[in-house]
Image (tube, rainbow, N blue to C red; front, side, top):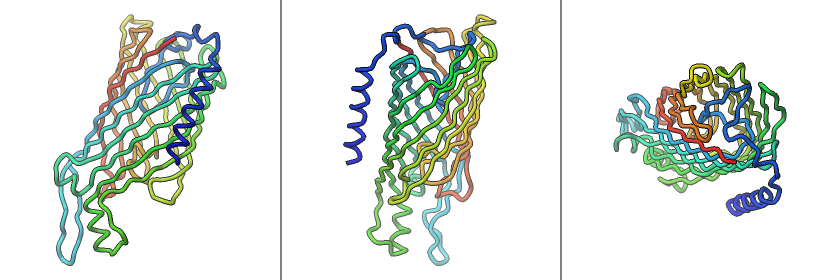
Length: 315
């Protein structure tokens, strides 16, 4: 039923969008800018600008070597391993400008976590999240140097968890109906603020804060999610005629596509280099370093991840 409601909402909003397209949409600039400055896009911070664009991000991350404890039965420990865990995620987002102050967007998300060899797969399992969100972006304030927008969205994800270790624990603890595979859907409603400020054509700053509330990745429970971050960037194109941009940022998030379980938070430190020589697209490589809570590991390991992103702008 929830999937039917979700699909129906997408069709309804798309229909409204098509019928309310403003005559001034063709006058929008392809690459949004403030004070002569164009901003780099981050996979962790969404843009505050009302524009039509298509963005794709793919990321690969890896932990360092981890000691994964096993199950203690009497004086013996079984299923205890050492190894690394691989993180993979994919995001495809489309945003449609409706008027000069309103845009509609839809995003498809996929994230997975699994061991790099059979031992860590057995110990930590195979964890996947798929789904997406739909929402509206509304301009609150716009001036020569500052842009502020608000957003509201519906997020629907489905978690798939395959874990042999948890299955044995359930059997040992006499849990009714133990299962190796668990599928858990989660629907939530979110809202937030996004902003951008350009000091001059070279230096810019972006920020974002958002909250969401709804179903968690534990059946029958609800929870609140929070995400907030800031990123500063330098564009060498206006002053030095070099089509390169650099960015540094920080994000604090409890979003399930990053945490990959219910509960906990991650602190993400990012750096990015991007190509800024085009007025129609942006290409960049992002490095992210963050901590994440993994239930099969006693300590809180750090993940190093590379993201390749490509963003096209349209009239």
